[in-house]
Image 1 (cartoon, rainbow, N blue to C red):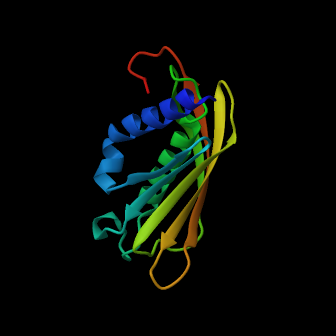
Image 2: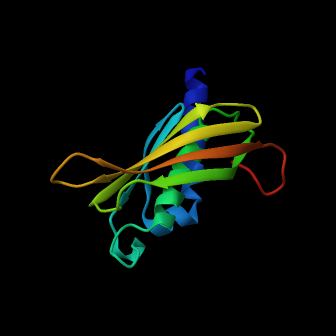
Length: 150
């Protein structure tokens, strides 16, 4: 990709993320966009917890899905879009932290199907980031479908 295409995918990802009502609802923000890698961060919010005060698995899954899908956006042509068709999440440790980092990375790019892997980390001031979840997701590249753009 040349410099213009690099800037273009970053712009497309930011614009698409800005239209994601779900990510706005949970307070997520894009913090890193590189070709093949996207990071999303989220501050702890008690409204996003389950009954034990831990970050809810659904919130973790949604943020990992978004990170992996936006990583995949960085490797597709500007006229294409993506839809998640499958994902598997492994919850490895309780979601306890002040902030959370969700990193998506393209594992296998493709013209029709893209696979990405994600990792979620809890960040606390008193120690290193802790891996709390992993995800493998599969996205379908969509072109020319009404209502599915960018």
